[in-house]
Amino acid sequence: MLMEQQIVNGVQASSISGARWTKSARSNQSGNCVEVAQLPGGGVAVRNSRFPDGPALVYTQAEMAAFVEGAKDGDFDAFTV
Image 1 (cartoon, rainbow, N blue to C red):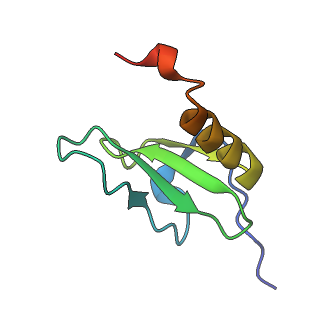
Image 2 (image 1 turned 45 degrees about the vertical axis):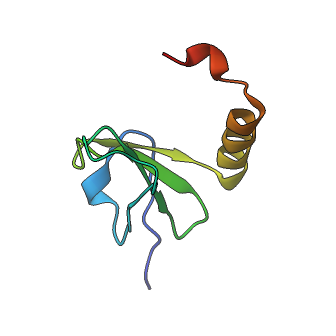
């Protein structure tokens, strides 16, 4: 019987089996990018592309959708540098 891999926040990104990390087409080439991977259980893992073996944060689809909508609505504009 195959058991689904349990993935938690802060897990080493490279230890997530079968993750296919994707970077935005708008990312620059300087290595300061966020990458995401769709997880088998429906979650989304996020990592820093500069540290591919570093920690990954894991969010639900609903959490990611809320974040994207907030970004589109300007909720985070105060954080712009």
